[in-house]
Amino acid sequence: MAELTTVARPYAKAAYAAAQSQNALAEWSAMLGFSAAVAADQNMKNVLDHPSLTSEKKAETFVSVCDGKLSEEGKNFISVLADNKRLTLLPEIAALFELFKAQQERSVEVEVESAFELSAEQQDQLAQALTKKLDRKVNISSTTNSELLGGVIMRAEDLVIDGSVRGKLAKLAEAINS
Image (cartoon, rainbow, N blue to C red; front, side, top):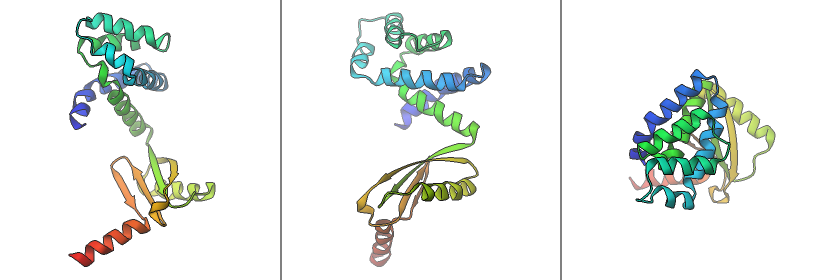
């Protein structure tokens, strides 16, 4: 996974720079998101992996499947990726692009896993507390997991805060066994 990210990063940076220069971050975000979904489709993977197709034909096929969802710059980007045999990296490129965009917008996506469903008020309080702690605008998405017994686990990029009862019990058992 780290290797894919390393290879995809220069392309994501180039796409981000192009989007910034055109003042079109939202358009590029949508375009890359759609392209990533197309590239992840099994039928498209079969086309992209086909050894007898030229990179030009692969790019042409890819653009035709995207049918009007790509700007001229987006089509050129797809052609560059095809020439370098990197079309299959589009999901990674799109994810990195979104990360660069979030860093500029000073926002972060936080996944909250809780034992019980959180009310809107609890989510707002949590978002306010995390906004102060992370010094960024926080967008929360929450899920429930009854195996946690109580508390929450929060994930924001590479930060994980485990405030679950299950996590605390695991730490306690680890301390006792050491």
